[in-house]
Length: 214
Image (cartoon, rainbow, N blue to C red; front, side, top):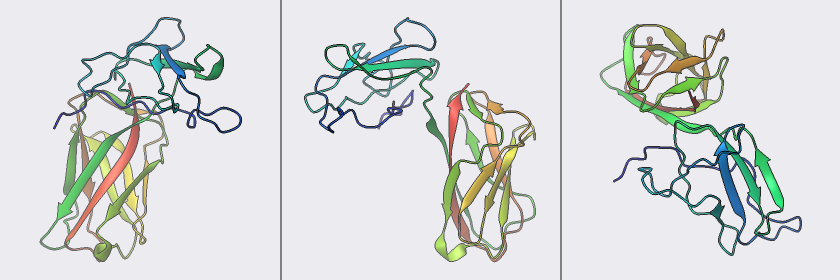
């Protein structure tokens, strides 16, 4: 299995079709450095070793090949038809990356009051926006909490990074401290610490948050 060194590009608009809903054959996706006319490289492989042509060309059905982005580049994107007529543009193209996926499992009774449930090591520099609330997750259905269960997030130095709250339906919310974005450098660790779990003894779960490059 090859681990991806960069995120896959997802178009920040819908599938490329014309105003009658017909796919646009041979559409062109032009990538630039944000705010400039300097072309920026994208890649056809998860290791970021094989560059795409720029523009990237859609097939006869208007479908593009898989596009991997460099995690160190902020992109501008201009999409045109095969004749160069503008379809869509975005500058910056605010790509998001589901970079953070952590899972935990606890067995042997209710967690202690300050129980470390998971530690996540960032592969690239990353930022949670201030007051971020876009996250989701799950807990094993037989282990839903009887009241809201809070997991406190910190870095390896104990600095606050936010909280995850799991409600009685198993729905997740994630909130940063709010005063400023929370940034992590590659190699830094996000630690999730839970308190005593209401009505949860042996339980497992996972948490997903979308974070941006920094």
